[in-house]
Amino acid sequence: MLSVLLTSGIANGLLYGLIALGVVVLSKAANAVNFSQGDLMAVGGFVSYSVISAAGLGPAAAIVAVLVVSVVAGIASFLILRPLMKTEHVMSLLIATIGLSFLVKGLIRLIWGGQGDYLAVPPLVQGPPLILFGGNVIIPLQYLVMMAGAAVIILLFAAFFRFTRLGLFMRSVADNPRAAQIVGIPTQLVLCSAMVLSITVTAIAGFLLAPATLIFPDMGFALFLKGFAAAIIGGINSLPGAIVGGILLGVCEVMVSGYVSSSAQELSAFVLIFVALIFFPRGIFGARKTRSV
Amino acid sequence: MPEKIMKHAKGWLNSPVLPILIAVLVGAFGLTLNPYTLFLLTRIVIFVMLIVGLNIMLGYSGQFTFAHAALFGVGAYTTGLLQVHLGLPFVPSIMFAVVLVTAAGTLLALPALRISGIHLAIATLAVAQAVTWVLVNWTDVTFGAGGFRAPSLRMFGMDKTQTIFVVSLVLTTAVYLLVRQLLTTSFGRRFIAIRDNQVAAAANGVHVTRVKAQAFAISAAIAGLSGGLYSSLLGFVAPESFNLEQMILMKIMVVVGGIGTMLGSVIGPIVVLTLQEWLRDSEGWLEIIFGGMLVAFVLFLPRGLAPLILNAITGKFRSQSVDDAPQTGQSLNAAPSENRKDEEAV
Image (cartoon, rainbow over all chains, first blue to last red; front, side):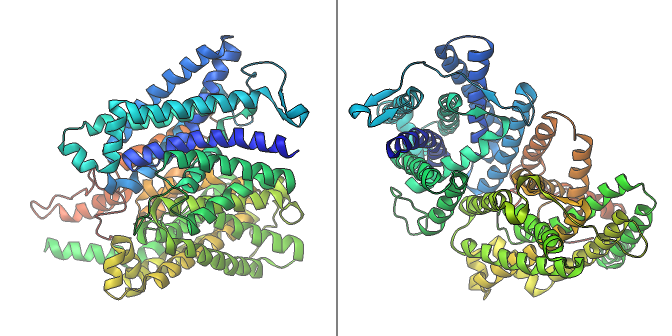
């Protein structure tokens, strides 16, 4: 019981962590929050549905399609929101991304179906569950794929920030946008790539999540909230914190659903967000600042 | 001479006569309508009241919260459930609902004292989602996701839609006039001071904590009242009338009408609810159009429709003086919540 709960909690938590990575990247580089992120995650799920179920292609084609769609969506979002991507427009940006979120949801509904339509995506791989410790720990293959996928993305992410020039640019813009501009770093490019990166990682999370649940047009926002909660718990500007926060949230959720009641699962996330924001607004890995919120 | 006319026009716009006159005309017109159209009109009237309250929080005090749909819902549920479970009449039920929602709104001000901006938005969002969760899952009391039949008010020999229409119209006009009056007093100006610069407001002797709590309380009280009226209008209360989607529609009403303007609180609901009715059965187009509208307004018309309309009205009087062309006063870079002189008219 406990081991099953833990594995599903960690698998879900890693996906929350991926959404949280998207939140953190955008918050670090552009000091922005994108409410449409969750809906773009849903887009990831729906695109993989179209490729795998409708077109009958393999998971590799689905990954390519998700990447293409998310890069296009990221550049489009950046172009639309560019006039608002300044510190003094934080609230306007927030309202505009709420509009985008609505827009994306409408597009999903237009393309893939109405309110009550729940679509099922077939599992990415088929096979028996992994059995460890003589049957004490049973991990369904789907969770294993989710975890592996999330781990790969996280490693790619870390490598990107550590070893590429663009990653270095992004870190410098996050650190001090003005100074970065003065030394000649193309800040617009950095903002654009932060947006693209944030949406890509979220859409991949949607692709990984889709086979484990049913997908529907309204799925995005609750997931975004959870990703945001994970980012807050980890400290809004910390990349490792996002992953840790995601796993904490995922495990916390399945524990509540397993030992308290399954309908309380949703509630636990909201309670956690609220408590974290009020009492620990800097999170676990957050930098100490005199005035952070 | 032109200035005198101008002044006269302005004074006329600011007197309570005009809103009352409009309300009377709307009332006389509404009573001739068929029940369905009257239902839509009443919905607009109730939302005008709600948005006036939301604007206090969002536009005038600059507190970006997401809990208003939930407060509205608590008002509707309390009013309906007290009648259903305890058999209370409508008036005490709605009065109790207003008290309860005011208390809840004041409690919500507690996080707003510690956090602001995006963090406050997300925290109140979590509260709102939790409230929706309670409405769905506390089935013994709230009847769960299916909702319940709320009794409708009936008075003066009118049918139920007409009754709630007249009651809502009277109360909305009263709330509108009260809030407009309030915002011209020093009490109301403190809200604006906090929105524009919290530190400067505190330095000038504004008790930030208390004023924020007051703004939340007043705004919540209005949400509770409009929620109670809404339950009676709908006759059927269900959680989806108060979910996040409704909250976003309310935000769109505020932004489209004009954030932080009284006239905007009237225009927003008219525009959004009419459009919504028109797009009701479209698959996805409702979201696409409303989402696109919100983005477009924030980018190109951040002060909403109200300043345009006001200028169209006062511009008529002003055009007599030479180069005093009306300023539309919107610029691409002006965020809706900043660099704004407080304007209140009509």
